[in-house]
Length: 278
Image 1: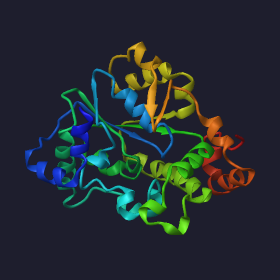
Image 2: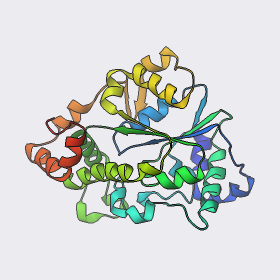
Image 3: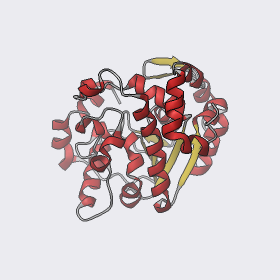
Image 4: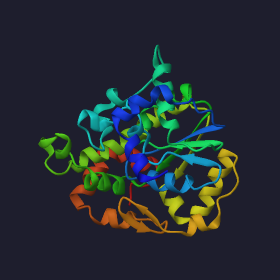
């Protein structure tokens, strides 16, 4: 899909106009990558979208639908934990129409392949909704070191741009750690309702991408990735690189006070995944 077409499909007026013309995709599997901001979800989505059996949306699904809520609509850039009730979707009366509208709007960005893949960060708060209305749904949950994630959220978020002038140019590191911990809390809480979910870590993925991708292929029951996909450079958020672990750079930007704050806010989750001593 061309960048121009994607840009056009991201316009709300176009999305509303196209609904009656959209089809209801019926893939063999719906695949959703979930995880916190700055956890490798974009990289993983780009790579998996190159598989010959997968059609991935060119951008996050929230940008291609007028009813798939995103936190920025409520003034919270990269911080959905502060508007959880607004972005969380649950099965219920009339919600089937919402899901149908989303599927039709996404259909204009998908190729005719057995598996359809989508990644929107706030989907971590929508597992039960997705499980109910996107069948069969398969979830890939990627977790990354909470110190690196918190630093990445702080560095990448622009609260003032979205009207949160009280934070100036950056969120406090405590809020960023809160978002990381809340993501895992909600996924842990809701995963009981999910039939197909696999957990991977950013660290394992960057250390041995081929092994992790083979594991995901087994999970999805598809053929292996070509070697060239694993070995090539990827441009993610303006940085071009091979698949590599960038934790040290992120953690190196944290002060001792920052590290202590992240530990205080998200210590339980850090301990859960073995990141506490990093």
